[in-house]
Length: 158
Length: 158
DNA sequence: GAATTATCGTTCGGAACACTAACGTTAGTT
DNA sequence: AACTAACGTTAGTGTTCCGAACGATAATTC
Image 1 (cartoon, chains in turn cyan, brown, blue, orange):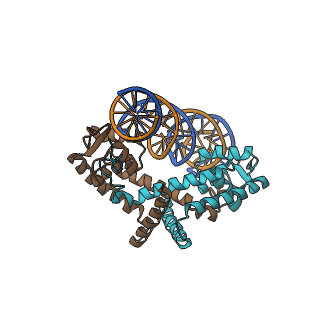
Image 2 (cartoon, protein in one colour):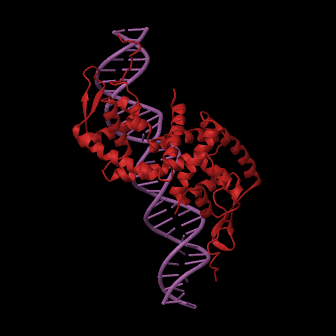
Image 3 (cartoon, chains in turn orange, purple, brown, red):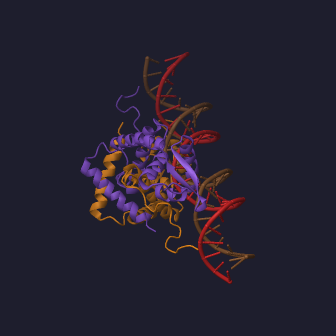
């Protein structure tokens, strides 16, 4: 007969050790997972992914660009960019036209339909960030962004 | 003839748009990637991975445990834990013995050799954190850990 | 006590992600 | 002219995270 309070007690009831709990690399991984799940869930309601969103935002805010330039700006690998733009082009959210000045390149441009779609995605992303950052004050959110940017800038530097 | 300063200039030289640059979910993803690369590179010099490290630390700091308990504490999926412990057991860093009180369970224990190995890994992980957090002051590192813990605690809560 | 329900370790496989290699095409360099 | 390099594209690899299912065992319910 089982004791009700010691039911499924593991050999040792201790939780995550402090060493692990305060490991920044681990916390970053877990934070990224949470963020990824939340963002994908929201964006999926509009049939989009984070990659689609990144590409569209970059096209809107930094203007038309070649696929290589888009890759560099978004961090999406150029071999993955093909499918992302393929999907966006199929939905008429972007247009791919050959660059007359350099025939190796495509000039990718966001369409009016793409802008409309993007404004929906913008809203979904805002909701994602709100859900993700719910436990933090707005000062804390700003500080977190600042620290993460410093980290990224440092390690992305060439 | 190419101009040397405009060599490979993309259609539009603008960089990552601000909207993208300050997106916390994106920054978390990039930070996690940097952290993962650095940690793996260091741990690989001792033939280990982050999973091996997490398991060993948890066994040392929280004591012997079943595989299910280990899974819960480390966040490693129980189906992946099998191979991790298999590797550690092959190297004699842990021992898996059936639990006499519950024959479904294995009791996993870290061996003296495992502790010795772990002290090496501890050093490598410390070096990883130092490399990862190089651009931050020690106050900033503490603040980053605090913020990330708040985030993780909130989203890991059941 | 028998039948059901749940947990354990384990195997298999899938989905997403980041990336490499290679190719034909085009441009730039020597 | 010959070489080198970048472009978009396809195919494929390794890792990570996860769900499904299984036999074995334990706990719960009738």
